[in-house]
Length: 111
Image (cartoon, rainbow, N blue to C red; front, side):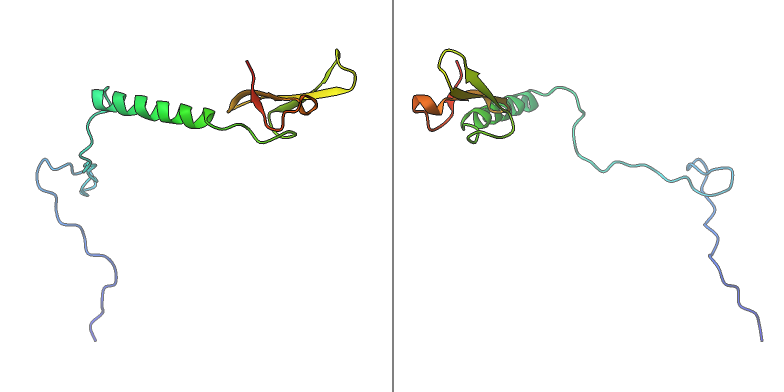
């Protein structure tokens, strides 16, 4: 019986000037299908960034940190009041303090 060839068929011959390499294969084309504009500054983008920045800064300052101890909290001993302990927070939510001996039950904004 007749033998069968197993393998890939050769690529069709490239047409002239179509990006063919010296091996006769067609070079892959990079064609962007994105309809995005260039990355230049755009007034709509600037306005959106300003609104997002304002929303994020409001979100970051709208809540107090969890009560100490924890990340961002440092404990201090008040030298003017014997045995008085207070906490200071500095972190993504700003600066806060709490002195349970003074009746504070929640962190207070540090000013």
